[in-house]
Image 1 (cartoon, helix red, strand yellow):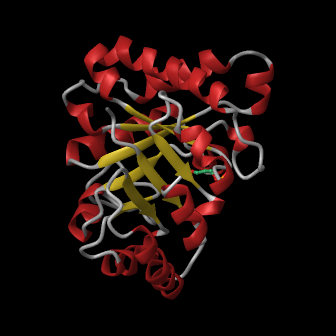
Image 2 (cartoon, protein in one colour):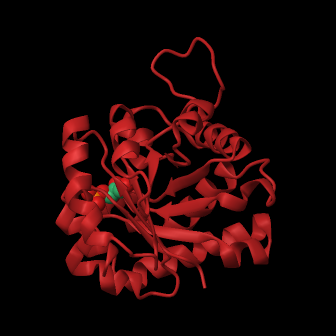
Length: 249
Ligand code: 13P
């Protein structure tokens, strides 16, 4: 049995004060919940407040990106070592918004992933097709290509902590959710590709999350699928009650 991961991606929302307010309300709602791993990924400036608020609780903290160098003249970037020193073990890598708006490519995803894994972090690597690709029946090709390039020159041993998030771009922030069946089909493609690269045993243990308009109303049907090992939640994770309801589907 793969333990599910329910992760919040806050994107560019909330200040440190709002972060503390969130945890004050959220933690009692999920206290004692150990069926799933709960992760919250706020903006960098909120990490300290999140860590402080979640101290001793069953909620881990993650970042939304990480650079591939340990230090250097890279204005605006944050390294894996910096995050780990702070106490942040999880990191989202290759989110479609980074690919779409900030020049992230399969190659930079690979660099970030390699460095994060080598540093001992738990990366949540995002893949997913855009609407035109789905309509042109290119979803499988796109997912396979994104995985092959993201995992390039990474060994199964190094990749042990890897988590994948399947996030169809047409379902992000649109209110359109992939049906559980459609998400499962995509997860199977990803698992098959991971098996080709890392071996069957690795793929059997690999956790693949679904992201794209996950809400309290649809989390149960999605999470009931055998292929779906958790969720990466955007908008609905900003409200403590709604994120708690998703966690407790
Ligand atoms: P929404 O849940 O707002 O659709 O966002 C999904 C997402 O991008 C999570 O990383």
